[in-house]
Length: 54
Image (cartoon, rainbow, N blue to C red; front, side, top):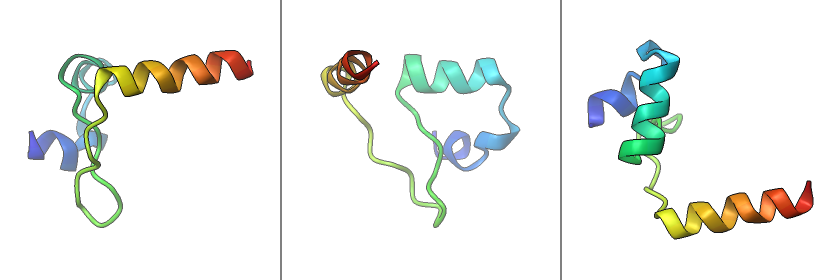
């Protein structure tokens, strides 16, 4: 998983989507430390709030 986070730019769009949406893997931050995982309920709440603002 660390290699996917650190090599995010080398992944295809489909691979990035699969990592993010299916596996919950996100790209590493600027300093190389992986971002903390966001649980599904938190993602749902975040997307619902964005939809309400729209």
